[in-house]
Image 1 (cartoon, rainbow, N blue to C red):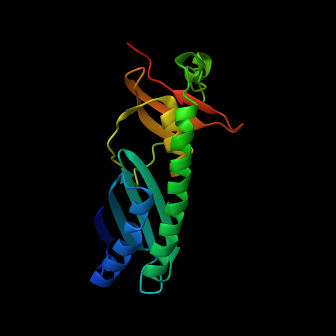
Image 2 (image 1 turned 135 degrees about the horizontal axis):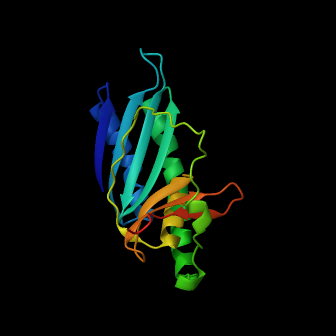
Length: 189
């Protein structure tokens, strides 16, 4: 597995690179399809007193597993991130086995509530423009709704943007407050 290290305003030592590579390569025993991992390291606060924030993103054939941990020592943070990733790998493998048993027929997929998707802003609503604080770019492979739900759960997110293989368009999947899922689809012109 290729490992890419990125330090934000700090230098990553060769000793830490070797330590992290040893720990991350252990994941390939359980997840041999892992292509590469990106290890982002930064300080949480200015100065030498701040905690280290280590975020590890593992790409496994188009599926992404991510863990972010904080500690006053980089080695401890990578240990905790590796443990979190190993739990995600276990969950990923279990869902991959179960997915083959529970293929969802096209008729039984998530219903799209047209009324919810078309709700307009109230006339007295005001849009406040914020500023972009982070831009994420990632490759999108076409996937089904079930695969998107699995990917969202693996990442631990409340929403997931994906290329819908059935509708050949972008779709936004999100978790509703009642625990169910919903999707936002663009209106065809």
